[in-house]
Length: 306
Image 1 (cartoon, rainbow, N blue to C red):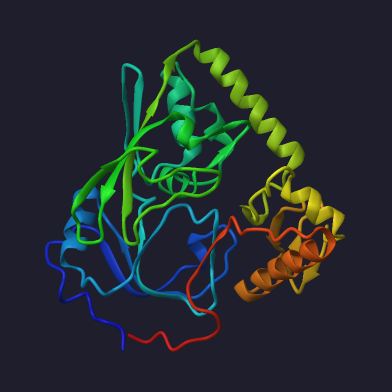
Image 2 (cartoon, rainbow, N blue to C red):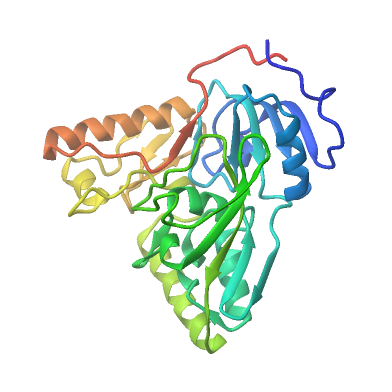
């Protein structure tokens, strides 16, 4: 029996829902329900929730759901959805501050409008600032760690923290953050520049992405992290997996490091297709690919009644 929360958490200004479907909150449009879904009104509301939420109940942040595969059995505990309200942006000399629910593209465009350079690469990253911090997102030769000054958030019990890139060991598509910690905002280094120059670079990046990656489809971004010394798509292609299908789950013909839901694929279809690709690549090249898409929740059907 899942712990009841709706009568035990006081003073909330956000929305707390039990047995909440998650599929529509992700780009892949698959997956089961969360035991609980909490959409905080702001960072203070999140802190109040964490202070009262039982410590043995798992909590998991969710941003844009662009790099997340929710399994069919749903998610135990509480999913914290930050993208709706925790999304303020501000700046001062040499620094831009963005809350964790901001989309990366929104932050890049804000910076361009303010004549601030250094964050152009974010315009093609399909996620939020919080997710980008967790996975050290990047593209076009730059990663979050290259521009991050510090990040802030709350520990599992609601205690505030402030942390630098070195302190949570930001490296290629990976960081070390204690379990249950949730980012709420980050500060980035920026420089004054001509807005037109910034917008021109961003347009080039957007065009390059459209030329090389599937857009306008149900996907989850890059499926696997690049192995040392090569690209994931190259070893996937060499293993003969371009266009591979499992029901309505498929490997993109345009860029074979992208999983696509063509319509009615289940989360299990997509995950099993990904594992099939990993096995094929290991047989072909000896390389065991590492998932870049975050897979969360329980496999299979479960009784999610509260």
